[in-house]
Length: 110
Length: 127
View (tube, rainbow over the protein chains, first blue to last red):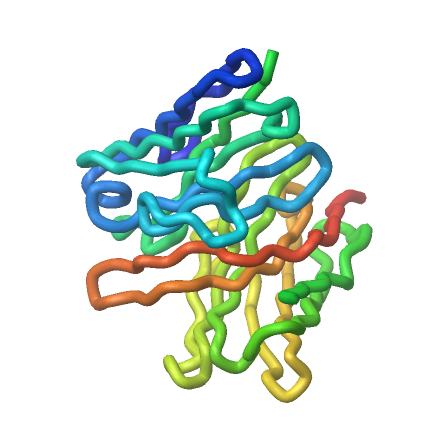
């Protein structure tokens, strides 16, 4: 059971927009920054979003992040088949004194 | 270009030990906080632990499941990170990733994220 809760799967058509939610508590998301990671099949995770809504320069602006209270959201616009992957949110939990991740969300581009 | 290359994975019996290495290049290793993150087969990501830069004290932090069994060290002269795993359990079976960890910690929280990741090395604990 993950400390952060994500939907197991989401799907959308090519060209459409999708959002992935990440729900936590006051001891984690409500207390610090959230980051998001993309894991394409058979590869290592890659950083997409850090500090809630900032993108590394290597990441296209189709990817965005936001945070409100104890929840965070990853948004992906202009979906491509190459976006099919598992997506994870991550943050620090002050009660556990540990970095924690959500259980992951599998994105299918229909 | 940042590169992180893990090695040392393999098959080990329960109760055994294994040491993983992560060779870094393309950035100033001595200034970086480094972490290990693992992923059990078909499962999600799990943080294992970190070592801060020497400038920030070189201290280590660990997740509860591995505390007291795993240690993390670094050799800045060799630009290499290590994960020493003792008293291994079957539930430690996973791909282990080496990552750079950016950000900072205060007395009450951490504001960090995992910037670059290696390709991972598989550790299998089985009799």
